[in-house]
Length: 244
Image 1 (cartoon, helix red, strand yellow):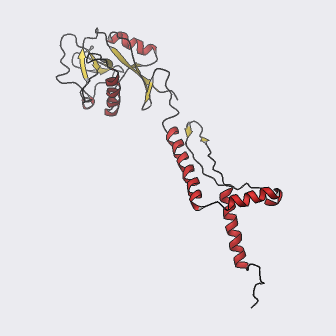
Image 2 (cartoon, rainbow, N blue to C red; image 1 turned 180 degrees about the vertical axis):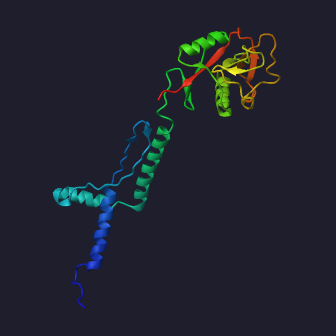
């Protein structure tokens, strides 16, 4: 068997050397790219595409001084730096995903607040239930219809923060003005009793208490509705679908 000549690498050692060099080159010359996709009629989707690409020109095209700089830099590449590079890229991708997945295709006009695919407007002025509804319609919506416990909780938290005092309540789109005791939403659908959030001893149906308002400075959002005269001046909550 022939032995390798003195001062030269064996075939196996040469391969290992080349493999190690290529690995360092790929790390040194790696970049992270993000690619976005926009699917037709589906709005923006988050697609963080991590891609490692090698683009360093051949060393022979660089001046001798530049080659020395590259070799010096390559010698400083460590596994810790590689791990830091990859971790930074993943964190950046995670931030992008969090920002874009927050329903970017749904939009509300200025002054409206987006939640759950709908836009809500909390009025600053006070007026009767009927006039409040007219104002909501003029804005392209209607007085709010509450369809879920989650929606009730969202509205209660918002209203609680902007109420100036206990009497600073907001009209919602619920009334029994057509028939006493038969509560209907503004779209004509009847109130689902399992999704009603009456305050203590409400509705009392006293006098002409035919319209419903919400708002409570307490801690229990399940009980924040009360009925009162539709002629009383209150603030209101308008609702309409979010634009796509």
